[in-house]
Amino acid sequence: MSKKKFEIEVVVNASPGFLYNYIATPSGLSEWFAEDVNSRGEKFTFIWDGGYEDTAFLVKSKYDEYVRFRWDYDEDTKYYFEIKIQVDELTNDVSLIITDFADEDDIEESKNLWRSQLEDLKKRIGS
View (cartoon, one colour):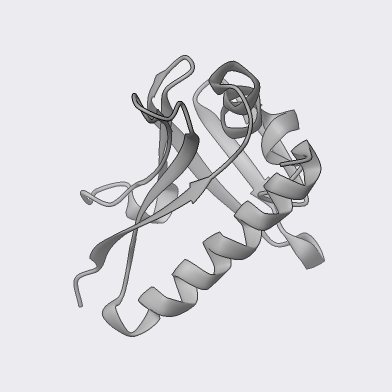
């Protein structure tokens, strides 16, 4: 079964430079995305509740703008997850746009998980 692409956008009251540290560094990601995150070069290990681990590779990044990871189990596919910082030109509102892929039956559950994680991030940064 092929996965479907989906996006979520959440307004976050923080500067792009401040947010970038939370989406691109192991210490920042461990504040809201996983229990702990370690990296060695482009390889990031995400440690979840209960000690379960997943590995992802940093595929692309641009300072203050976005990071794109690919899970090791999706290595030979087009699938990835991306966290993008977007600044509205008119209002200067800062948003995070998540792009991810999930099986069609799991899209709502995946969106809810992302929303929950993003709420954790907003609480951590006082947004």
